[in-house]
Amino acid sequence: MKTFVRKDRRLQRELLRISIILAALHFSSAWNSKSDTTSSPSTTQSIGRRKVLATTSACVSSILFSPQNNWIVHADPMNALLPSGSEGILQQPTIVTQPGWTMPKLYTKLGNSRIGANSLSPLQQLPFSSQELYYPSFLFGEWKVTATLKQKIFPFGKDFVPSRSLLEGSPRNRSEQVGDSTSYLVHYFSTLADTPANQVVVNLGLGVPEPKVIADRAYNILSMSRAYKQLSPVETVDWDYRKDPTRLTLQMGSIAEDLRPMGQRRSEIYLTARQSEEEFDENTGTTIYCSSERSRSVTVGPGSVSANDQEVTSEYHQVDDDHVTATSRIAVFLTPNPNSREGVLWQQVSGKAVAFYDYEFSMERVLEEFEQSGNKIFRPCVKTPKDVVQCA
Image (cartoon, rainbow, N blue to C red):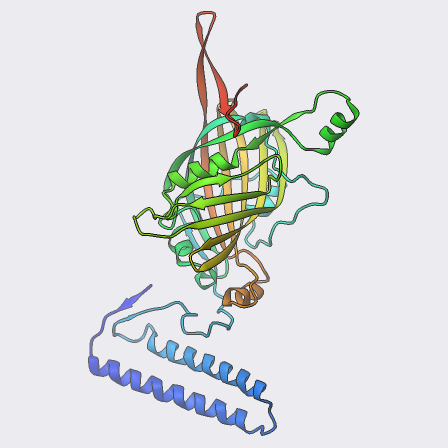
């Protein structure tokens, strides 16, 4: 935001007086034109009043907050004085990028269509697809992840972003800036996958079902919440990956990170769509894996309920057995609430994403030390949600 210096109080008062006169003249002219139609229903007059008031407010805003005025004003967003039921003002994309950074090459179709896109509609679930994301075997184990926020993009301008914390920070932390790095641990463990192929094997007794690698969502959410020092830290995560892997319940702490009382808050997360793709890089002989997942979180607090729609897409590149790099994007969508201004803005952008947060990940495998025949060996191990230790 820009701040202009006040040079003359008389000039300030004069400009304010002129702006009020112009606004009143505009209101009077528009209202008289509406009054000429004597047979207009009351509903039409009500709509006319709202339109006239919206135009009048915009007129006052444009005069009071014009950059040509040299007196103190804090320039509010374009939509600050528009009524709550009105549309926003579409602007050019706002892009904040770490100096010298460019988007790495993306190798998968899914990565190019989701991470490399300038305009993004919500991910759709493919027919008969799985209710869980299955990862390649090279991601099994415990990993130390260093995530760096490289870029923020607001495709329709800042006024379509649903909260100030997303403007000033990111979905991970309200203070996270482009260039900031955060480290945390994540777990991927092996389980008997509930896939059609495994169901056939089990039902017909044709052998042993094939295990698959999945993310320990409960552990990973807690780990990231603590690392990012979120305002409302997550205390517990309820997730049953066998009964319903698409739903998680998060219980937040009643005391915020800055010791402010927040009251009891609970968040229900619904994983509504997912896709994945795996490629083999013949040049390096390594695997490239991309996954995308859409979620809706409904947070219930004292006297308030809020809903948020997001999508996370990540393309993982296996460097060697113990190192992985990744490019990841968090896309934020508005929610289609017909009773709020956010619902009006959602219609205006046709439900497309209003914010992108692009990250680069550096992942290093955590190895456990064992002694075998007098020699020390290192193996990847991980504790499952059932407190069972698995080792490769």
